[in-house]
Length: 155
Image (cartoon, one colour):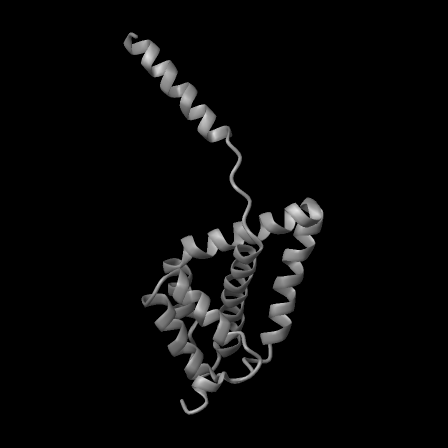
């Protein structure tokens, strides 16, 4: 096979790979993606709320966003595709909006058990430490409506 034939064969193989459908995310993956999306929104909303006080952490949130962009974009894509599969394109858009608005309403008056100084520290830590698994664990704890027991003694 000549060079032109090899190029054509490679192009054909590449086209098949691009055309192959991506495997659908499992329900657990969609649920984890939702937790990460909610964590991101909670940090954004609370950073906006704390911006006028002594513990403004908008720059820290922006740092977190930049450093965790790949993870958060992947979570958004997984979450949206899970909703598209269940609800169709229009239903998915509504569901994504519902999540965003719900989080903004929930945290617009502040976090239920963390103050701005604590949120600033958490945001700095999340920007610089850990990966996907650690962000999921942080989401589980930080999105809880009450201080988890293991944090009860920490002030």
